[in-house]
Image (tube, one colour):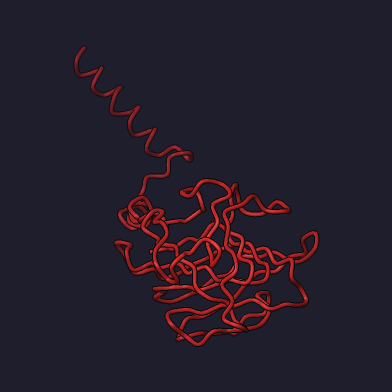
Length: 206
């Protein structure tokens, strides 16, 4: 009886292994899946730390370049906008038209500065969403890793800054344009602002 049971069990197992629905993973198949499961998640700043409406700038005696908060390892500060070295106002607000998610950082004749050096990794890519309602003028600012400041339209950035590749998607939005900026390379700091421009979902990818 035991012999017959063992034989039946072996036949069932063999049939399952030969089933067309059975797709056993080889070691080669398993490695990419294991690597994907262990891949670290991006770190993102979504303007969720300061209360909605929090202002920064000259009228509030905000120190230039001094960290204002840290969100998921990314440090935020404000610095002057060019032309004119203006330092008017940055504020955590809901955007005038939907983009990103939740609060955003509006820059009005001022620049946001995001520092990624406090992260436990050096970003290979940094992205952020933007909304520009100042098109076709006035201009926006962009700098990466201490590069010279780009003064122009955020929807048409230079192809590279300080050795970092720069690109952006662009789509129409009520009163202007929106998109996602992508910076490829070992990004340490990003400066971005406008007159006005809204920024959200600043993410660093390992």
